[in-house]
Length: 235
Figure 1 (tube, rainbow, N blue to C red):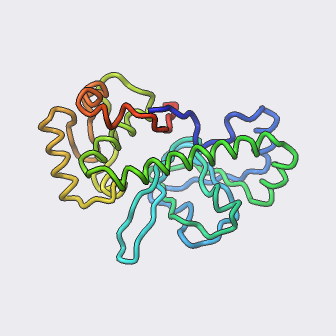
Figure 2: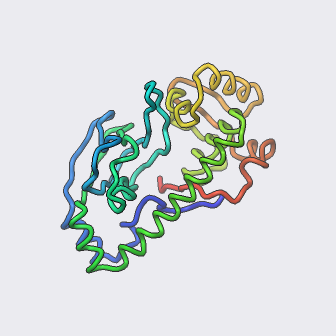
């Protein structure tokens, strides 16, 4: 895996004077768990940053089936592509925990970019890295079995916390994991039971405990010892 620090954040690397200018153009609000940041199909006129907490980026099909495309945590920005393309939002963005949200209008962002070119440079990095992450995720959905996708998804979730060496508890309900993998609950439960019998995980209410990354690497190295970019957050 290739760790990417701040692949959803163009703000952190800015000089202090530029961060101050962004702060001056920002508005802030708090949303509870389940609060809606963006709606699929609605026009987007603001960039939003999750200052703390976690959101899911998801799409819902005509028959009501939800697929989770990404989970974004502290520091990550959403609505980056829509703010430049002018297209309606291509996904719902929903708070998985209580969140603190920063918003910057498109008009203010364009002024900031003209005055501070480093913003555009960091935005290009973020958009490019985000595309690479989503590309690899799309390929995995096409070529891997459900069991392989489960193993890889759990490994990536653990890896994103800073490459821990021991046991890692991933606070992700099975319902949300199923949506990330575009899988049925029963099929996912069968795979989790199989991985539990292999001694790789312990599955509980609202969480999965991964019993060490080294054990996963030993058995499934062909899945996880690859040159694939992974977002790494600072816990």
